[in-house]
Image 1 (cartoon, rainbow, N blue to C red):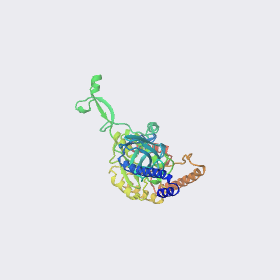
Image 2 (image 1 turned 60 degrees about the vertical axis):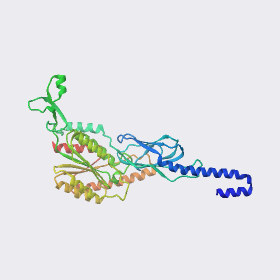
Image 3 (image 1 turned 120 degrees about the vertical axis):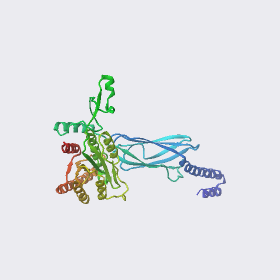
Image 4 (image 1 turned 120 degrees about the horizontal axis):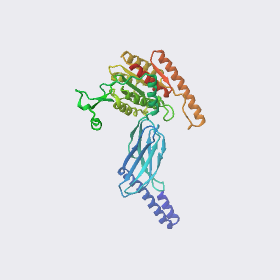
Length: 423
């Protein structure tokens, strides 16, 4: 087209030749600059800084992009891919940046906190000229990575559990013995190990005392949290998967202080994540808490591992000792119900005590949706709720233990079962 314009200008008015050549030079320069930028992008130095708390605090992702060359990038269109479950509340998913030579810029993205593991990236960019005539191909300047957000520990729930077990008289008494949790101090007696002597008492009170540990409970407790796609139905932070993670975190915080041996397993379409052998005290709680941040929504629909195989893997990892097994899941699918019944009966035959825990969520807030979308949403919600209640009745009819109630009541019921069994 430029060549045609030059030929036309010569034919009409030779004086336009200089203007045509100027335009041609500008076009060539713009094209050359876009191609030059394409070679600069791989030389950019990109670092990522992450600020991640629990699911009550925002997630901050800051990309620092440094241009080590002497060529400025005048117009760089950038874009960030991330998990569809994350909600961007700060920054822009796409935008335009100017990167001066031998200087750096920062791109900040803020997401709402949400328990689980999520994909961030890749960060890509495209170079354009200032007139918008040319653009480069898409260049990935930073790859994808994952962030793990742990659940918030509801202090009010843990405090309520302590009050309830004390007032109901169902908590077992603390007894001194072999363990890792502090119990009390007593006067030194001949034969006590020197490593148990509390020397600061001798220095401050001129008393020789030894530290006693609380005798550990040998009751094993396994939490199994289902994070398959069906558990992510609902608004952000109100899905069954997220409710279950927060419930388990609160219960584990209480039971760890009571000396119980804890472990946790996360299952979804990609397989099983297991915390390992049951551990007591703060170590056991930290391990459970760390694994709870691994709940994730499997985006790859071709990646499907059967529930039967996952439950078989859990059965192989169970200790020989009697274990309380709490499986947090939904029971709206008939095939899933039959698989659960089969394996829970098998767990019981192995000497364990399995429970199915189903949080009944009667209503979600859908204030961000248009009126028509809200109505359709509630129709689907109550249809799913009916299926779940029918599934619960089916499981109960087969003699399987089920706890189906609103999320706020589940911690109290589970703690009551544990304490009464061990009392």
